[in-house]
Structure formats: C-alpha cells, structure tokens
Image 1: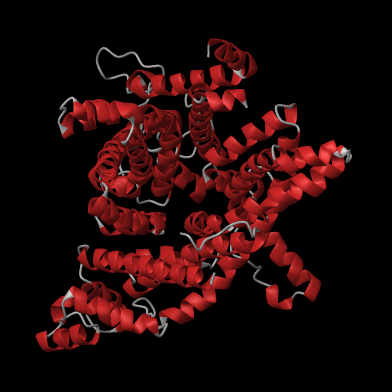
Image 2: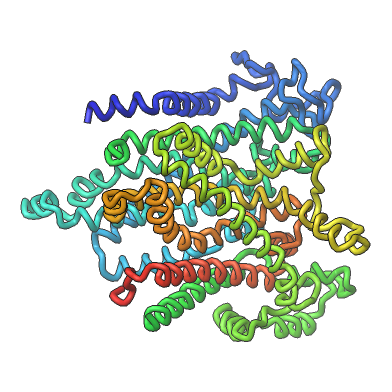
Length: 293
Length: 335
C-alpha cells in the first residue's frame, strides 16, 4: 500500500499538486472575496481592488471599457468592475455548489440507505421514481421550473437537487445491499444492536468513503449547470454577481467586449477543470485497483 | 429475444407515461393559469385584457381548453390526443404544435448526428492510441484533454468561439446567426452547400465536445479491456505480428461497447441543444423549447418534454438492442 502510494506520487505528482493547489486557490478566493474586491468605504477592510461587485462611479466609470491598470479585467455594460463581479460570482457559485452537493448527498445517502436496508416495496417504489427522474429531460425541467417560479436561491436549490441526489442514492443503495449480509453486520445484529444502530454505526460509515471521491466531480458539474442557468437568465437572482450573468453579457456584447468572455470563461473553466482533475487524482489515490493497473 | 424486446418496449412506455404525467401535473400547478397566459397573449389579437372578459366568455374559453375540468381528467384528455400525435394548438401562434416540431426536429437531428460522427472520427483513433500506448505521453495528454473537454461548459466554448471568430476584435471567419445566409436562395448548388457548412462549423464544435470526451474515454477503456483478454494472448502465442493482433483482434472487439454507448449520448445532446441553439439562433428543438418557455406556450412545452424523453428512451433502447445483435454472447432472456 505504502509503496503503491510512493509509486503513485512519482507517476502523477505534478498534476495532483497543480490541481490541488488550484482548488485551494479557488477556495481562498471564495472565502476572502470581500478582501479581494470591495468598495474602499467599508471600514476595516483594505481590499486588493477598490471596487465592489455593485459599485458604479457615475462620474468616472465607463461602460464596456477595456482592461486598464484600474479595472484590470475591464468593465461591464453598466460600468461595474469585471474583476470584482467575477470574484464575487465565483464565491457565490462555489458556496452554492457546496450547498447543493451537501443536500444531494444527505438525501441520496439516507434514501439509498433506506432502500438498501429495507428492500422490498420501499425499494421498488423509489426505484421507479429514480427511473422516471433519471430519464427526464432534466435540464429542460430545471429551466421550466425556474421560468415559472419566482427567482431566488430557495427555488434554485430545489431545482438543482431535483435529480442530483440520484447518483448518491444509487451508490449507497448498492453498498447497503452488499454490506447487509456481511458478517460484521450479522454479528452486530446477533449482539442485539438496534436497527437504527446498525444503519448509522455499521452500514453508513462503511459505504461513505467512496462517495467522497464523487464530490469534486459533482461540484464541478453543479457549477457548470448553475452557470448555464444563469447564462440563460434563469439562474441566480438578477442583482447577484454571477459568472453566468457575466457570460450572458459577453454573448450580448461579443463584438465589443472580449474581456467579458475571456476572463469569466477562463476562470470558470479553470475552476471546473481543477475540480475534475483533483477528483481524478483523489480517485487514483483512494482506489488501489487503479494504481496497480 | 422477442419477449425481451416486448418487455423493454412496455417498460419504456411506462417510464414515458410517468415522465409526461409528472411534467403535466407540474406545469398545471405552477402559478399563473394557462388561460390567463393565453389571454395575455391574445391581447394584441384583439380579445382585450383580462378585466374586459365576461364570465360567459371565460367559461366558454375554459371549456374549450378543458380548463374547467380537474387536472387528472385534463391529463387523460391530453393523453388521448397525443396517442394520435396531436399535441394541440400552440398558444403563441395558433399553429398545430406537431407542425412546429416537424419543422424544427430535422435541424437538431442533423446537428446531433454530425456531432456524433465527428466525435467518432476523432475520438476512436485518440482513444485507441491512448490505450495502445498506456502511460505514454499521448496517453497522459489524452487523459487531460478528456477531463478538460468534460469540464468545459458548452456556453463558455460557444462564447469564446463567438468572440474570437465571430467578427469582433479578432477574426471574422464564421457567420454567427442561423443556419443559412440571407441570400441563400440566390446561391448556386455548390454555394448553398458551402454556405450551410460555413454556418454549421461553430455550433457543431459546441455540440461535439461532450460526446468527443465521452467516446475517447470509452474507447480507451474498451481497448484496454480487450487487450487483457485470453484470445489476445492466444493470438500473440501463435506468432501473429503485433499490429495484426491489435487491429484484427483487439480493435474489432473493442468497438462493441462503443456502439452501445452512442445512444446514451442523446440526452446530453438534447440538453446542450437549448444553450447552443439560443446562442447561435439555430431554429431547432432547443430554440423551440426556449421560445415556448418564454411565451409560456403550455402545449408546446409539453410536446417538448414528451419528445425529448421519447428520443432519450429510444436512444437507450436502440443501444441495448444493438448490443444484443453485435454480441451474441449476451443473453437477455434471463433478465
């Protein structure tokens, strides 16, 4: 195991380090967005860039201005600083994606656990539901719901978790089915452990580790879908800074403002790419079969 | 085999029924009744606004669109209609919905099929090389390229292509609206083809990127799997040249799983269609879905759900069927 780890580190170290480092940088951006870009008026904060995501200087700001020393990524169509909006947009997507993935994981794990634990009719019923939702034209469904309901993070969370729990559920269900008849579970039952105890103390911890490999990939695809919804104008609330909204502007002004396309698009891609690469690295690290291959 | 196919078709119909039922009920429960939406759209048509409506007219209209009946009854009525492929009349322009679908479907189908062909043409050799020279430079490069293509949001590629090649500050190489030029009718035969291809390239890149990543990855896994089989060892043991082992034995067998995953690409292609077609103003199913959403055109929205779900299910069904035909070892009877 240890020598495998060494071998692995020798084989793919650069990529793992780079992707891990990039993920850390993005988490840093998310956590310290107010210190990176904020109006200098706020007390006690000395930000890197003296513009907030909403700040417009009516006397000085130019709309759709190319990058300068002052506005390093240029300005958008009302003269707001693109760097500030991008930083805060990335922060919003990252936090929201973590929320979505957490909710999907909890729902999927509990439901999948219940299906695998009880089997029978419960399993059959939810399997059919999973089949229907799994075959749904899900992006169309998300768009429709968002178009018809009021915009807001609550609705968005609901829409994004609608199908997101299914992979977790499917996986945990299979794990529970597999583990249910193993000796350590039977031993726990023979010792008189309650069903609840077997569920949470014996089955759940043993089926969770592989789930976490899936998290970086899920974060990446959640951020992509969130961006797509905002890009079409139905995602994050209108007044909130978001990467998708910047890209929507880029589409409307693609002849005049390349900086609206290049910086938000580039950083969004870097974020999703580093998450996915980090996920593959994590998978190789935790799955010994992959390393021996 | 017949029993299996029949069983699958029945299961498919049940799932399709479930999907239409859920989307129908969901659409009816969202705020804003279809009738009010319809009236708002008719405003310009001379019917006047909601307040000018007498209760009698309202009741008449409600009866015409079955809105006076409970949801479940409405659903059954709708189901009866679509059994005859009658998706009703569009709220937006009063044309039969099925006519609009017929108009738009070929455009999306052509883009979808071309993108699959393009991904096969590039993805198969790339996956093959990557698997044949495992852990080589090309393998690592492909691995990163696949992850990159997976992580690249389709709208980001689209916008970058628009910005760099759509006549902004950089290159003015490609047209960015629609599928043909304004003077299309006046062009010669060759000119017409070139014009179409010219309009085709940028959207097609967007359409292909996801399938390309998927096919490359699957082909690599598939050839690696094939290379570890007993018959490869046998072929080598009897002294066949490596190239012949690779092409005649490994490559041919590695194609089996690839054939079956093509159908699985349909859902993601349909999902991307909304974004790509709105971005490049391509009059396909995706743009129709988008327009009907903005106009709250309920019959068209329902038709879109039904057709998308049907195509996706059909793709998976055809995949399984192909799998069975290509590989006689697979026995479905027991399932």
